[in-house]
Length: 353
Image (cartoon, rainbow, N blue to C red; front, top):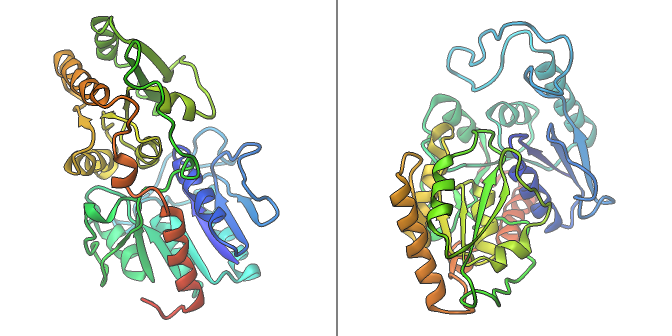
């Protein structure tokens, strides 16, 4: 049995968990506070879900939480462990109780410092994901130090540093995408009216009207929007990704991996996130020579210029992709991460702390 903790912010962690679980033969249990939904589990007979309560007072959290958050960081040693939070207490008890009952051979945390430490304190080997950005604070360093291995969802060419607190370099496996098993068919790229797909996302940061001005200025293109406040949502945007000459998107890890799987021409707009996560991902993307990056505070003119430059690159080779799928190492990424888990599972002393 292999255990996986999938963080509940957004849906990228859960998608990555399912993709990696599908690449393994072992029984897998995914522990998460995320809303899993119907029909997304690729193998319900082998991949099970253990729903966890939320550890905060947000929508859907357990009842009876305290009115004020007390000592959430334990004096700067943790990220989120508020005193008197019943959801936190219950989810930790469920986690350790599940470990005691099922005795997993390895626990993969994607990602939580507190879950990493709780699992390791049961004597279970832990593999953790290292997310992009600056993660040299005390809680991250402590979590890194207790893991048997550390993995990263970016390509090897983007670097394999030794994370704060760790003794060994992390293992980049490439971008894990839910679309890795599909192959892009950009038949319409370079023909007819240029098509721009704008993925507004679900970050809840409101509508950026500068993009509305860009759309109005680029009257020669077909502009398609998905997501955002009040926008149209589709559960499977694969066909739209493949049809677009250019995709405008935030720079979350799962978003970039899905764009890379579609071999899309990307204009990345990193959103503000803790530890500058999306800024770092966008910088890696740009450093590999793939995709234009525009900052959160960029002007309408700068955004228009980035879209037009990317459109020119896309349209210069009709029917061809961007090369991002190969550069971001999409193919085999889930299998490479699964292999790390299986290695630690079969020999707990590998990199053990």
